[in-house]
Amino acid sequence: MPETATTVDPRRWKALIFIALAQLMVVLDATIVNIALPSAQADLGITDANRQWVITAYALAFGGLLLFGGRLADLWGRKRTFTIGLVGFAIASALGGAAANQGMLLGARALQGVFGALLAPAALSLLAVTFTEARERAKAFGIFGAIAGGGGAVGLILGGVLTEYLNWRWTFFVNIPFAVVAATGAVLVIREPAGSRNPAKLDVPGVILATLGLVSLVYGFTRAESDGWVAGPTLGLFAAAAVLLLAFVLVESKVKAPLLPLRVVAERNRAGVYASLGLAVIGMFGLFLFLTYYLQIVKGYTPVVTGLAFLPMIVGMITGSTQIGARLMTRVRPRLLMAPGFLVAALGMLLLTGIDLDTSYPALILPGFLLLGLGMGTAFMPAMSLATHGVQPRDAGVASAMVNTSQQVGGAIGTALLNTIAASATTAYAASHAAGARSADLLKLQSMVHGYASAIWWAVGILVLAAVIAFTLINTGHQGGGSPAASSGDGKDAGADGNADAQIPVMVH
Image 1 (cartoon, rainbow, N blue to C red):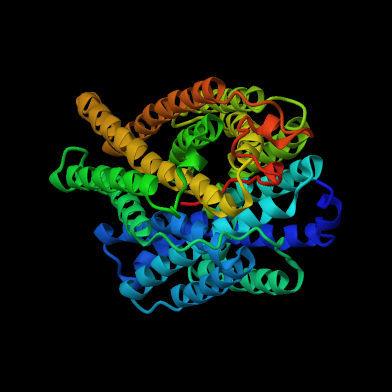
Image 2 (image 1 turned 90 degrees about the vertical axis):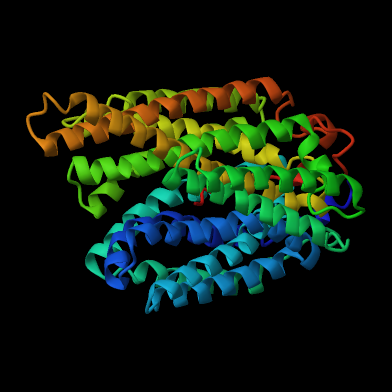
């Protein structure tokens, strides 16, 4: 297109700094609160039954409202939605840090989820419409992907430091300077390309059905973890989710201006990305959870040392995304990066099935973390770029939200599914080894480690399945120059701006 050269934003690299900073804040918040939870629980007198709501209140609001947030970004404008999300997130964080009781903390967490659902898709679709040239896009997404991918582990370190040396409240207050700097930068630097909004009216029935359906699904998996998979409330929530989401698909196929245009998810390459990423996140979230408990309870690491132990995974992710994924995605077909990436991550996970009471960190856990990070970083780069590649600019927000939604739902499923598997294996091991046990404490630790290892075996299988889906469904060419239609594999959907849209993962839970 002749206007491409004139529409390139000269401040786009500065804009990337503030978009990435906002993303880092959201990703940090996912893990930083997990580390602080035991201290907050003791301080505010939160019961064991209610402590999960500190995590679940955020996940429900965030996961349930993501599609709505993505469509609002397309309607209102991404820059405005991004700024509102940042300001709201800062206010919610201040309320969380100042919480005087359980109710105030849970309310603040839900509010963080609401504004996070505005912020995340707006940030990612801003990135998608700001970087339009293939090589620049690959470089920008490599930087952004490393920040987004590594942010969860950074959250573990920062959460440990703040909780151990200051107070759990600082795990909330730390968001405020991030939000202020990112919002100021957004107002001064970020420029949204003209003509990329979607002026259509908001699909209210779609919003209600999607939000209720996703909330039911996420909450169903949460209840499965606490009540069991065949309990009445669990089955009722899954049935409600199925009915609501089916009704949502029917409504979307009929209305003039759908919340989620079915053309966004019907194309086989994007469907392959959403499915394989959702599965990969199921495996990843289970691992984060188990290894955090394993390192602290079994190995006796402090919160700070536990966070530092995850650093090699960040190094692997940064290397995979910037040195392998970003360099090769303009020259190699996405499936030839994604499928091997997921298999390398599965190999790292396979090593971690060998954990025991006296496992050596340098000999087994360290190489497992490096392989896992390297594989995930390599796979995420082309996957995220492909997820909105060829999408019309007016759909960029909702396409970004779809990836976030698949990851949120994947995270909720992973936590519940793998936790349930681990708990069952732990109970079975304890029962079968009770007679010959030398001490009750030793048996408890052995049972726990057996449970974690059993669940990690499942995660290996899930990552292999993600690799198979990526290799089978994704058939597009590499994302270098060339016509958008040709490289997106979706000629009818890729307009003049076809190769302008790409995005990077939000690892949030």
